[in-house]
Structure formats: structure tokens, C-alpha cells
Length: 264
Image (cartoon, rainbow, N blue to C red; front, side, top):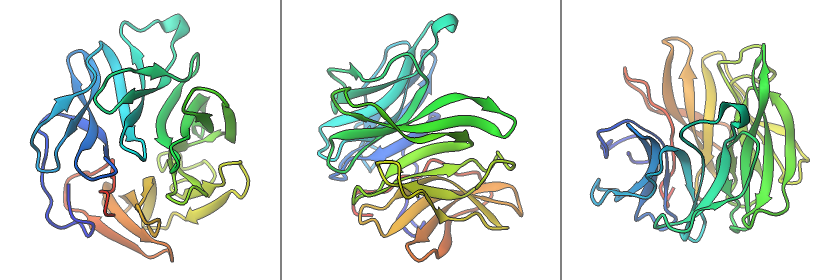
């Protein structure tokens, strides 16, 4: 973790972890981690203390996201052993202590859920296939009780990593930098939750390609992975509402999977 300008970096875990998300009150961080039974979800204090595993079933439980009230965590997952003939990745919601897991989607490849600011809906990506321009993915929204499933963005090559703006007016996503032939590769886009108003929020530049963008709690900035073309390393960038881009975490090591603290 680090301050919002990239200073005061501190390592919280020693094992391999990926996606992380801060609780709304800033007291806990949810993250997924890898062990010999799969990928699981835990929470930890911002000082690195009191690590608590929330899932342990053989398989994958990943990409945790807190609900706005801090009472629930959404995630995607699938069990081991894998049924190759009927393989599916589902969206789940559990209580913040890991109890009462509920499956919301079935029979598809659904990934990276994120709550709406009012906590009533979840946006997520649905992988629908592959193409020469990259993996094909759509964005769907579903009510937190599993009803009301609908498509918001039609499947397109390279689409990935949805996030919901704090004012509830936009769902953002990026087009993968590693899909250079796909339209808007390396750019951040946004759309209204009803599927209208699709637009480019931050266009890729000759120097930087953007991915995994997440909104600050006040909605004034985006925190994004940014691939620097000159040296081929992933950085973390801060993007202001006016489009000013600052590389805030760099160095010689690859960095990834950014998330904001509760204060932004």
C-alpha cells in the first residue's frame, strides 16, 4: 500500500496475491491469494496485522469487492475439480466475515464484480469468446438478489475490468493494451448503467497504455495501471478529471492491481 501520491509504500503480505479492495470505512483490505488448494479471499488490517481467511473451498474465489455498507463482499469463482464439459465462472456474494455465500450467476464465464454505489446492483464482465484481436467480453448488471440480469455493453475484443463511478452515473472499463488491433486498445472507456453514452474517458497515448482503472471515492480521479511503452513495465498512474496523468508508482519492478483507500 502507499499514499495517494505513491509515497510511503509498505508491503502487507509475503505470498502471491492479486486483486485487492479497501473496506468503505478503511479498517480492512480484502484481497485474493494463491495456495496449494486454489485462489482464496482474505482480509487484513492496513498495518498488515490480523490477516483472516474468508474462503477455503478447493477452487478459485477471487476479485473481492466490498459493498458500500461494508456488510458484504462480491467475488467470482469456480470449484475444483474443474468440469471441463460444463465449465463456468460465477458471481457470488458473501457476508463480510465469509459466511452465507450466495451464487448470483450460472452457466457463463462471469468475472470481476463491483457493487453500485447504492449497493443494489453488481456490474461484472462476461467472457463470451476469443478473437484475433483478443478475448471477447461484455458488461452485465444484476441485482444483488440475483434478479434483473441484463447486458450493458455488448461483447467486444479486449474489454476488461469494470468499475462503477461513486455517483452511480458511469461504469468504466478498459480495452486491453495487449490487444493492439482492438479498437481503443489501452484506453479507458465509460458508459451509463443503462448502456447509453459510451465514451472514452482516457485515451491511450504513445507513451502509456491504461488498464484496471478504479475511481477515487470522491469521483475526481482514476487510479490505473499504465503500461510504459519505453521500458515495457507496468506502472500505476493517477488520472485527474481534466485528463492530467501522473505516474505515481514506478521503479524497476512491475506493479499492478491498484485500489483506493476509503479517503481517496
